[in-house]
Image 1 (spheres, rainbow, N blue to C red):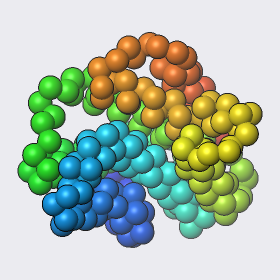
Image 2 (tube, rainbow, N blue to C red):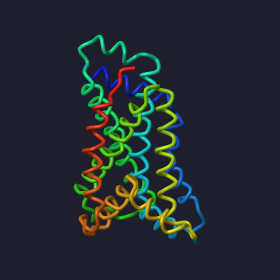
Image 3 (cartoon, helix red, strand yellow):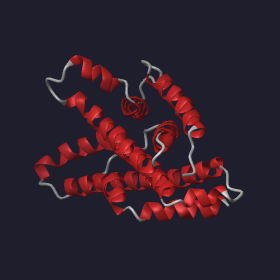
Image 4 (cartoon, rainbow, N blue to C red):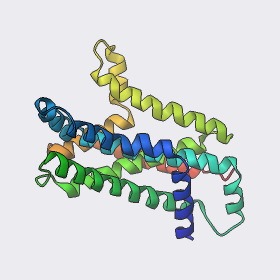
Length: 240
C-alpha cells in the first residue's frame, strides 16, 4: 500500500519539471557557473558556495514540501483522493508515503550537493557535524511539509488551496530576502524574523557552523510549528 502511494507521489513530482529545475537544479547551476569563472573570482565563489550550502538545502526542503502540498491539492481536484476514500487507505498512509518519497529526494539532493562542492571546489566539509545537520534538515522538512499539507487542505476548493500555496510559500521567499535589503522598515524585518523559513535558516545555520542551537527562540519555534501544523494538517485533511 505504502509503496504504491510512494510511486504515485513520484509520478506527480516528475510531472512538474519546473519544480525540480528551480528547486533542485538551480544550486548546481550556481556551482558550475562558479567553476567556470575567471581565476581571480573563484575564491569568492568558493566562499559563497560554502556559506550558501545551508540556503541550498533549506530551499530544496521548502520547494519539495510546497510541491507535495500543491500536488495534494491537484489530487483533490482530479478526484483521485475520493477514490482512495473507498479503499483501505487512510490519511496517515497518504501523508507517510509523501513524507518518505520527499525525504528520499531531499537526502539524495543533499548528498549530490556535498559531492559537487567537495569535488569541484575542494571544500573541506569533513569537520561538519553531519548528524546534527541532517537532523535539523529533517526537522526543517517536517515543518515545511506540515505547512504545505495544511495549506493544501485549508480551503474547501482545491484550486483555491493551490493559489494559497503560491501566496504562503512565495511570501516566505520574500520574507527571507528582507534581511538583506537596505531600508526595509524595522517592523517588516521583525515579521520576517518570525516566519518558518527564518526559523529554519537560523537553526540550520547554527548546525552548519557549530554554534549554540538553542540560542534565541528559533529551535523552540520550529518544534511548536511542527506540532501545531501537523495537527492542523491531519484535522483539515480533505479527500476532495
